[in-house]
Length: 120
Image (cartoon, rainbow, N blue to C red):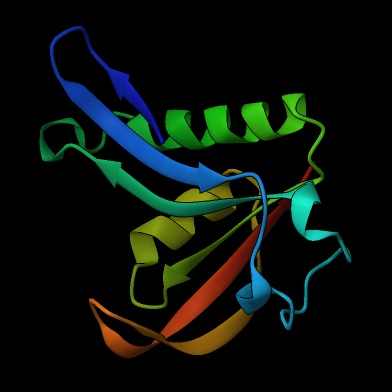
């Protein structure tokens, strides 16, 4: 878990792991990579008071930089299909949409997720 702050408030937070799990094995990725060659973003959150200030973009750039510094070969993530602002963010950073999956999540039930990949 990483967070950014402006001195007094947390502006954004991200949860990322330096590996992928079985859920990601069946996806049409650009590169066939081992589980421990991939960083996976699990959640990205921005403090509502800091939306539209570039916090999410800066946080994702940091994730990419950290993954690269650790010798990983890709950053991957899934986002709710309805979360168009997130899709725009990831694509603006160079992530490519690779697949769509209908998965179950505790907080949403069965829903479509888009899967994104950034090769390092």
